[in-house]
Length: 295
Length: 82
Image (cartoon, rainbow over the protein chains, first blue to last red):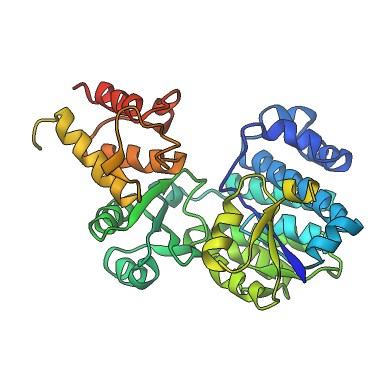
């Protein structure tokens, strides 16, 4: 018996993010203010550095509470030990902190550096491109042919029925039309740019330098990388490399399932990780922090 | 493009909703959006479909305050000017 923790990325941004930062823990709120300014929590979506640091601070705050609860006899009795942790995209930094590989305050600072790289090394190509979520029961069978015909790169392999593509606006328009012709669903995403694709090559080196400057430790809980769908080995290479490469989330979940967890915990906020887990590994039930609180 | 009419728009919306696995056969103007399993992601996609197919300038936030299917249709018709 055991549980696997899943940490979301930027897919779902809570409206009360600033308040959540302040509630995430004194050390996290202090690290956030230290790096970004005391007022940064008032408007955490003002820039990428604030937003990414805020999401990681909130994720770590919630994850730490989950780990604390999982140490209590009643919760541990119901859910068992923590087998592994994984995070989706930005959520990897949250996961590394929860797994003990990175101090929480260093994780918040690293997330801010990662976010700042999106501004400092912004490429003009990004303005002509974006991301498109394509979903439907046949999407895994059809996506290779769609990309071969219309262009674009697979950015997120999220679930058996959902992928996200990075492409130019023209390619996205053509992919949208063709996907709907094929009875697939297609939704353009509001994003910082065409993430997890070769468009992001300009930020890999600066983010790698930031990761190399962060004091890492040996993880106490295995943390899985979305770049390799396996436990992290090369932290600077993998944390920076995934920016310009596909998030192999579906495969990561399938690997995590081989640990035979009895539950997946969506650290939250939001329920996106639970939804993707249920689609990919339907036999393993998902729980939230609220479920742990009431156990 | 054919002249936009309420019937044309509603038919496109219901074709999209059917693709979202919404039971359009039982949908009435009084149906609650939540009861009909129409969520915020569906609204985002529907907005993009109406923009793509009919150049209707509509954003998901335009549906704030819409609780029934009829409310949502009224928003679309108003934005489409029909």
